[in-house]
Image (cartoon, rainbow, N blue to C red):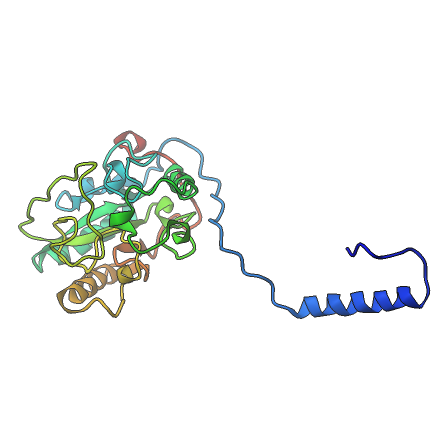
Length: 281
């Protein structure tokens, strides 16, 4: 390592050896550096272009559940349709879909309906997110979806995951809408963006009841129990959580919209068939 070392024994060589041993011992006691976490490598997805027989389209189990599948559109944090979403459908395992049907029945009894933003997510979509995260110049949707979060922190701070439970078919993103449900203005690519952290009425006009932030808002205020979310928005988050928990779903604490069915039938399998009717058997 040092450029002034000479060959041969003697007192000087022994002294150098003592110094090196001491230095190495000191280095072993110092804590290792903490590099910025990198996205977890994608798992090997289950082979096959079609879903197992127990996957269903949620609207076939309960047609009253609203859908707003953002990753099949340009209105998402990437700004274009995501790979693997040729159709705007909510596909889930039958077990999760039937549990969601029970949630919907309870929600309707209280004057609300479920609206899903995302359900099963193919591994190819997750790979698309990872590739996007590595392209620092692609930030055209930052002003809405992560106005205060650096793009290079989205993985480290837990806002994007790779792999994701969505690819196992029993996890979904959703909200509550009032019944009767008002129309929602269509998103037009290129329209002025509004921050997802803004108060209701000053962010994208989603027909959801107020949850304190918009969907896919990469900000601590989207954490389910963030103390800054109070009043009706806090109550609405708690209502959604109670309804979902009662039927076997658990919330991801960093996202008020994210729920996983606890008794998922494929806890270790990540699927890669596209989100399309033709994927079902």
